[in-house]
Amino acid sequence: NALDKELHIRPMEAKFAKLLIGASLETRKTTSTTFLGLRIVSTSSACNVTEVDGTPSRDFFTCMNNSYDYSEDQILNIHVFSSLYHWIFHLYQSQLLEARKKQSRDDIVSKLEHFGLVNDSQESTIPGFASAGLGQPQLDDQSHKERQ
Image 1 (cartoon, rainbow, N blue to C red):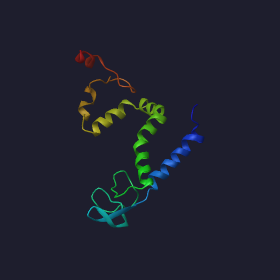
Image 2: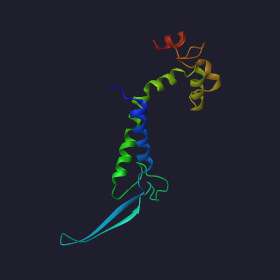
Image 3: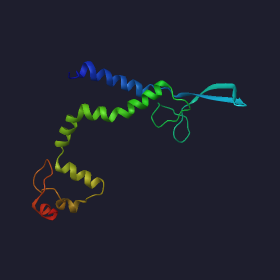
Image 4: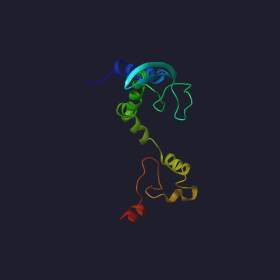
């Protein structure tokens, strides 16, 4: 019962792309006048979906847009966006893990330096990394003793 990539997965991803990009940028705003609890006049007008700051959306609908009355395509857009992480993680998990395994020690140190967690002079004293070789980080003897 495995899913075929070309028969099942790619068509579904194409459908997701259409739902994410193709949601409408208009919404219906309905105003009603009531008298003694009875609705006398009800008017509906089209207006733009807005960004969080209140400006009209220009490019495409996202889950961060505000709408008076969400249309079916806008609701589907939100549902698809909400499920993307799980879709990508569960279908492509093995590829993500393989890419992570190929990451070298230099790549890891470079990222740590980028975020200010270590500088060049501390590179040789990063706890948890053996000073020899690339590949998966391994505890060296000094950091192993410090953890005990």
